[in-house]
Image 1 (cartoon, rainbow over the protein chains, first blue to last red):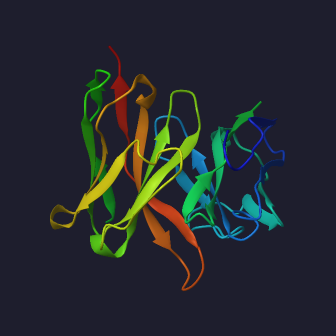
Image 2 (image 1 turned 45 degrees about the vertical axis):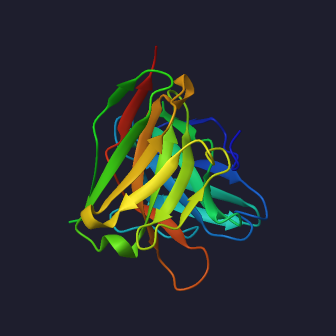
Length: 109
Length: 124
């Protein structure tokens, strides 16, 4: 059971907009920024969003993040086949360590 | 260029000990935290723990406290994850990653560079 809760799966067709939610508590998301990672099979995870809604250089603006209270969301617009991957939210916890969500497997139909 | 290069895949028996490594290059090793992340077969990412390479301050996630040991050797810019007695449930891919602090105050961190992963298989 992960500290942060994500839906196990999500799907969409090319060009659609999909959102992935991440629910936490006052000790993590409620008091610290949220990061999102994309994980393709056989590769190392890649930072997609940091500080709730900031994109590192090189990440397309199709990817966006938001946070409200103890929940956060990742939105992907203009869905492409190469977006098929596992997505993880992460946040710092007041226990002075980090926590991940359980991950969401995104399927592009 | 920042690189984290992990040691190769391991196959061990239950009860054996193991130490896997993560060699860093391309940055000032002692100025950053290094973290370890586990991914069990078919499962998600789990935060194992982190170590500050400058003074070896270590923080473990509750699930891993007492189960593994994280250490560094500053002289060779290498971080380690070790087990004293492996269990079949330790079978997983383990990633090391550099933790970057992107603000001057508060808990604002993210993993910016990752190793390629080390597959640990524990089977009798």
